[in-house]
Length: 190
Image 1 (cartoon, rainbow, N blue to C red):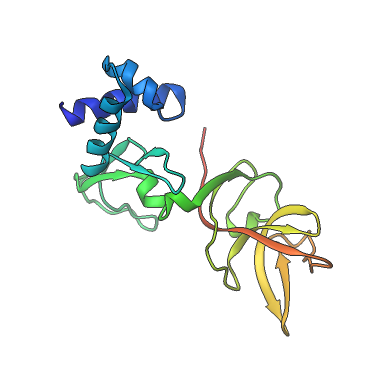
Image 2: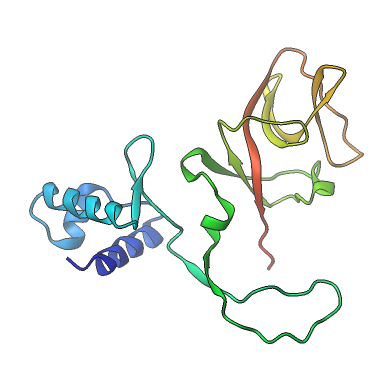
């Protein structure tokens, strides 16, 4: 079996269905008679770095499947006369998500984090099970509601702080549960 070709078929399925195929669907994709054949193919794709299994044993893409040409730096200060040059290719997912099996996405609603560069409609990448440190931006459950705020401490008191002066800080009255730490922000310009 040509693994890049097999990977290409699975990639096409993923991009159209927005999920990985089941063992039976892999059988259908490759005209296999038994799931043992699809299991063997998946093992080979994992062994060769195309796919991986998450903590629950489901197959997941090792990368986003899309790599883009990386052309190097661009000045954001004074313009510079460097010519465009191909440096490498880069998967946005690999660049933004260090631990895919422990990460998830949330869409931001509201403007309490605008001075941290997080706007309404942005997508934040959250890593769960990461030890939060003071100054990290958290997805946190505080007294019965979820929010996105900075983790702060003052004289031993933990609280959540916005990045917009029109909002107050929040000190937990009953509970504060950390859902995860923000590790990246994605914004799409139209």
